[in-house]
Length: 319
Image (tube, rainbow, N blue to C red; front, side):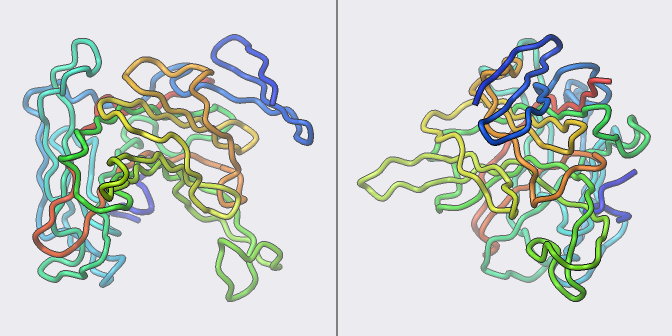
């Protein structure tokens, strides 16, 4: 099953198997699982030297002009495909793994974009392109939170002088999940919580990396943003002053809660790397579909995005 963005549109008690019980003074104790716990059921390690990507241009831009330009781009191993909503990054290629990556890794995935809006037209606003993991070819479709799915990915942050030189979001590592939203008839799904209608829809929580351009008084830095809180707002998390490899992960427990983890380096995530647990958008996760990447830039026709390199994106299930 492909992503709806895609072509078809307190206290801590440690337990075994990476399970943690987290509670607060006014909160019910709930289960939490470290991402990467259990059995790996889908991944790409980019170790095949023949790995390639066919963009099948022009790319889609349905979010801006309602145009899904088929056939979409796809990787040679069929594990990655273009978003029909926003299109794929202009450059998607296998590259040698930067220093400090996973032991033994020879290949990683590089993504960069220039024309992130409508092909042949520039919006002069921030736009984003998406690359989606075809999890369904291995998982067979949606995964219930009762199986406690989780995702893990290693992301390489280049030296700050190599980033697109503007303050704002540059990269996203997100998931496609499904939940039931309550809304007033004719109202928006995110904030109308007391309406008589309910609808089951996809939503896309995850991480964003924001560049903070220094002004002479402050140094360049980055912020790891979590999307999101009960209203879908982004939560500032790790403040990043040292670039290099980072590991990001999310787990989805049977109570519909999302647990966010991150750490510097490429080592396995642990309980100490837990950042926050949230019912994103105020809606509990009812099914997990897949993961995907965003690459963001100023769509002006001459400013390239930051080059984003990732390695070994993985999906696990506990049960």
